Length: 579
Image 1 (cartoon, rainbow, N blue to C red):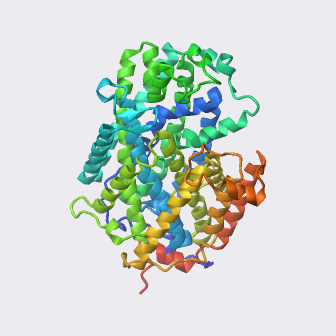
Image 2 (cartoon, helix red, strand yellow):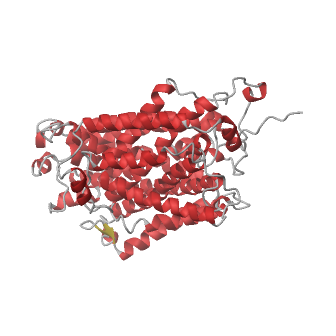
Image 3 (cartoon, one colour):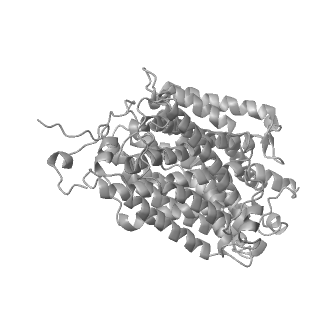
């Protein structure tokens, strides 16, 4: 790294037209893009899923999850204004570690964004199935959509595409209106349920007390994070993904990222408290543990809670007007989130194309609206395909959570590397104590990946291999004329990273239910180390932390040299003109 800093470098400013997109999104649009992604189906189902696992102690899980995601949001708050480009999470690792790292984390980013829209569509239809006109759209026993339900899903996705095609300014207006609704309805539900239908005994002696799972009070809390809490809190990065379309990214990006995360965390913690307090104590007392949501429980009230948690709670409490509002919100909230994630997924494929990882067709924009049309349509098609192998909300959540936190894991690495390589670039927001918080953020992301368990992780790795194959095909067929050379030296740590996380997950303490894509590998474990070998609980957490630190510092050491970073970021920070 050069020791001298020129006056031109000190005065460097990002070129805001680098991506040739329409910069028409103001602060409120960025804030509501993130907030609208955070408040989606997670608020409708996350409280139920967490409470079913850990009872009232799920509140601790929401607090822990909020701290983890807020740490990752603060890291993105520095990188977003530093590189105000479209599809930022797919491009930060590219700038720091080169083309292969960019392709790896970019594919993770794309995968999570493309799969959120179908999750939200599924959630909307699942809630709608409580209505008489939509009763046959969703099979709660199998967690699948019927033929009519699939048609409804296709129609919703088509509407998302149509709104996106109008242009980013109109999309921001639609999303702003939807997000005001999405924020106000949970707040209204919290107030009404706490005032009119709150059972304080649900936090104490009812159904096993505050810690209903006896023997180990910590593990159930940790399991709530990948089961729905982390998924619900995801979305702060949407402002970053739209960085290439922000009117004033220097001023607005960091504020939008941090503000949306704090507001979302407060709402979700209060939603969990309201849900636990609103449940009928007699209903809890009749279940195994705090709340048994298994398929064997045929209690019609429990079945309805599984289909529409808050709608059922309001109905049982006799608050008919609130139940009606919740039925409307069950369409508005998930649909708004699905809309913005479809937007961001097309921007991520745009970013991957700018990196040279996928065909250049993904970065072509409409001459009038400057929307990446091809990428948008492909994202919608891929999203619909994800409704087939993962039919239920809970199954999709696990895969998306893993992809999301692996995507997030690229940001602490990029921050640590770029702090060393390009310390002279202007930073509107500087993460305090970055040498400590950046590796902590990387550890936190990997812990969430580990908590999802082997079945989910192995499924995601199959998807990762598919992504590598598709990108290799694009490279081999010269489908992108701007394809860069492969920066192997700066990114070889990715292979031990992905393999190591797989081994820790495989021998760890957090398996997920059987049925994963690699569920038949138990013979390998038996032959290799014996049938009863597992990394002991708590020791496994230390192993993840130590492994994460080793990968973090190896990556920082192998980062791209400054001359290569300058080449990759020159579209945002062009070299000074010399006379």
